[in-house]
Structures are given as C-alpha cells and as structure tokens.
Image 1 (cartoon, protein in one colour):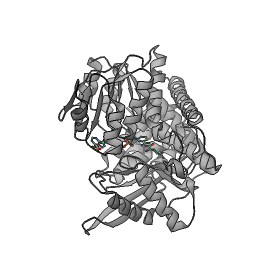
Image 2: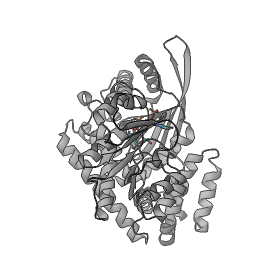
Image 3: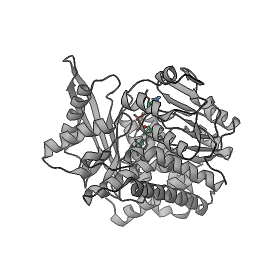
Length: 447
Ligand code: NDP
Ligand code: 2IT
C-alpha cells in the first residue's frame, strides 16, 4: 500500500499516459520503492518532484521515409524522448525494433534517468528509436533508413544537449551511418554527439563489452556478499546480441560455465558450455539465427524452438534479451532449480511478479537499472575521451568500468540498508538513483 500522497501522484501519472503498459510498470516499481523516502522526505512530493520527474522534458515524434531495395517508399516512425536533464545532457540509446512505440521509449527513458544517476557521472536520461525492423534488411537499406532518421534527429541532439547511442537493433554499423549523416548535415566533427562509435573514429575501447561485462561484475559482487563466486557455476544467459555475448565472455573469464543463449526464434542449450567464438561468428559477423549454432557445434548442444529458456537449471541467471522475458512461472522454476543470483543485463526483463518470487526466496536480485549501467557509464567515459581528444587503453577503461560497477553495487546495498530494506537491490537502486536527481531538481527551482 502506497502512502495516500504518493498514490494520488501515481494515479495522475497513470491517467495522463493511457495505453502504455510498460511505462506504467516502470513508474509503479519506482513509486513502490519510494514509499520509504516519502515517509522521511515528504518535501520531494510536496515540491512536485515526482510529477515533474514522470513528465518528459521534451518528446519528439517524426516521420522517417526511405526507399527500399525494390524502389518502394517505406515510412517508419522515429522517437526521441528527452526525459530529464538535471544531471547532464540527455543520454540513452536508440532502439530499432518493430515493437517500438512511444510507451516503450518512455519506459526506457524513465529507467535511464535513475540508471544514469547511479553511475555517478554527469548524464541526464533520454531514449529514442524507431519501429524500423532491421531483420533481413540489406546494408544499403539500413544506411538509407539511418540517414533519413538522422536528417530529422540532428536538429535535436548535440554534445551538450542530447547524446544517443545503441540499444536493440542499433550497433556499430548503425552508429556509423548515423554519425556520418550528422557530420555531413552539421559540417562539424562532433565526436561527443553519439557514443558506441567505431574505434578508428572516436569510439572507446570496452564500450562494446561494457554492458555484458558490467552486468556480470554486478552479479559477482552480489555473489561475493554471499561468500560465493562464479567459479564452476552453471550460468543461464538469454539473448545473443551485444549484451548477451559480452556477459558470456566475462562469465567465462571468471570461471563460470554458460549453458544457454537465445534469440526471438528459440534457445540453445550446450552442456559443454557455449562456444563463444562460434556464437560471435554466427550472430555478430553473419547476423544469422541461433539454431545455426547447434548445426555447427554438434556435441551435447540442442536447439529448443518452444518453451522457456528459464527451464534449464542454472545457479546464476543473466536475462540479456528484452523487457518482460522472464515471468512468474519462470522465476518459480529457477528458484525450484536452486538459482542463487539474477542480474538483469536487459532493461526490465523480469515482470514484477517474477521479481517478487526472487525476493521472497531470498535470491540475490540485481535490477537492470543498477546491473546494466556499465554500458551507459562507459558511454560517459567515451564522452570524456572525446572532450579531451584522448583515448585510453583497454586495461585502464576496464578498470574504470569495474570500479563504477562495484561502487553502484555498494551504493545500492548501503541505501537499501539505510532505508530499512537490507539486501533489497530494487529499493536501493531506485532510492539512490532518485535522490541525486531529486536534489538537483530542488536546487534548480520549479523548471
Ligand atoms: P541486440 O539487438 O544486440 O540483441 C538483442 C537480443 O535480444 C537478440 O538476441 C534478439 O533476438 C533478442 N530479442 C530482442 N527482442 C526480443 C523479443 N521481443 N523476443 C525475444 N528475443 C528478443 O540488443 P542488446 O544486446 O544491445 O540489448 C539487449 C537488452 O539489453 C535490451 O533490453 C537493451 O535495452 C538492454 N541494454 C543494452 C545496452 C547496450 O549497451 N547495448 C545497455 C543497457 C541495457 P533477435 O535477433 O531474434 O531479435
Ligand atoms: O539501456 C541503456 O543503458 C543503453 N542502451 C545504453 C545507453 C548509452 O547511452 O550508452
């Protein structure tokens, strides 16, 4: 039960944003966590901080026309939600996926505010994307789409204004086409306007690896608190994109055995541990399907087209595909099979009911806004390198990432303790992320 003042604020937010279930889910979770803050600091709500925080500072929706390889005109919809700039320029990725709509972009942008605050770096929150589906498109089609997308987006972004990066469906190839078009339209080599750039033209070492590495480091910290580690553990990873691949890489470095991976066509189980080079070849280089892995790997690997990846018994689960991919029944099955830690590489992959199952069973649960913050944190490190016209070594940058993830873990744990919820990383992340943004907003007055 929420405090009546908080409930009233929440009701207003939900009513003025109808038909956006993922956005409602993300907002509700934060309000649930803030109940403990409201008791001690009613001034935040009294100053309208929560109402203002839930209302994006700016929302841009635009037409993206482009011509496919057959010469047919296609029209997609582009979005950029500039959510909150209390701590720095809007910062957050672009998602290209057929499911993208305003509610999805708002949920992601809202999460990004708290996540970016937790990194301790000077970045506000934003998100964007399009309902463009890159699957099966040629390089030429992707290029023309990206150029058209940037032809509108360029007037809204900038090193000091809004700094997009990748997310689902947007990787180095897309960032290259986007940056090229931005540079052409503005006649400026403004490296800091986008992150996730190629290493030859302003990108940062470790950015590609950062989200997966970070989510694994966060899991390692949760395991340490319990006197445990990844060594010899069976680990389940979902997805086979950027985040999943580098989560698998880091788990293997730490001595764990990853036995699963997936895409939207199904999942694979490999009892001998996932062959990372083969997976990278199929998914990063060939942009193929996950079933190809089993055809080429053989041995004790199998492909499952139906059913849930979370039926596979594992000690640690790292959901790295998409939102609401892990349901209550999956969480129950994981708990029955003895899972000890769950660290979210994806944004909001566990439903609220699944999170409750994990927390009731005292499974260490790291929510995405803390656990996957390594990606955006390394984007902020890329911005630092661009601003100083410098580039750092892999070792130094990875050291910075590791320190940031450890400090997010510590801050989250200590904040949960401070507010009477020991071990609750959800409350810890939401409250710690919120406080910094709210205090900056209070300092700025009503804007
Ligand atoms: P990619 O596009 O590289 O990979 C996404 C993976 O998830 C693919 O295997 C894809 O399968 C699968 N997937 C996507 N949508 C669905 C769906 N609706 N159902 C089933 N499978 C799906 O994206 P990323 O790895 O970059 O992103 C994965 C998650 O991590 C997202 O939640 C993203 O928001 C989050 N994230 C990403 C960060 C980053 O730096 N990239 C930073 C922090 C969080 P298929 O190819 O078949 O579509
Ligand atoms: O969800 C996320 O944090 C990202 N997709 C990364 C954003 C970024 O700006 O690097």
